[in-house]
Length: 260
Length: 105
Image (tube, rainbow over all chains, first blue to last red):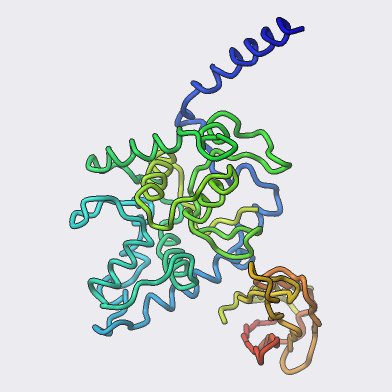
């Protein structure tokens, strides 16, 4: 009986090793989370008058033109018409910031702009205003291919993000890769496991009943494996986002996407 | 609050047309509690009305446990060119309006 158990354990181990080493998804097999959804949720995303994310885009459009801070400037006063000036911008984020010497997310860029040029208070993470502005800006890149991570200065940060993606964590001792590289297309508690391609952020999750950032999604996943989630804006979360965006290179942006 | 309205810009007289409305609202049910046990007060839209050139053609009374960002879709017959007016009324004195026009040939 004991030897049978030992054989079973060895067999299990042998079966587990190749999947652990399976590694990354080849570029032509990369798929947006959209392709994992049912027809109803797809229809909701496809029609701009049923996509609740568009409500935030509308709010963001109003904020873009609203003067704020002690310099009394609006985003539009420097950047002009977002439809041309912001086209393709979100597809490059997180991007390297020369002054800080590290990558910043689109949310952080908005708050840096507020601090430097508008002299306004930073908008809180996951607050309606920050989500609305980033949704409006990212919406201008809808259909643009993701190019984040192309800047050679980002190389060490992508490597850090990749290491975090591959690292087991939490009481369940799972790494991101265990689900999203090795087991996509299977199901977890009835829900499809996707490839974790961040094509549509900030996106409207029906479960959240609101728009949410990629950081919120990452933090939920970390809580799900019973790990201590990194804080909003922490270097680890930024590196993870950067790795995920570079991993989704070439996929078109969908902001604002709808997900279950 | 922001609202997205979908009414066909043009229709033929007698056509059955679909109207779709989506509006921002948290639709807090009043059944949920915070982490420290306090009840989150109810905050929902309680009534929606659509008027076609002043005549009420659709009304809905709404109750707790409806998804956030209310989406309603309904049908009517295109009779004459004019304006659809929409009104949402809710808890805490919430009121919001929107309108859309149609050309009937």
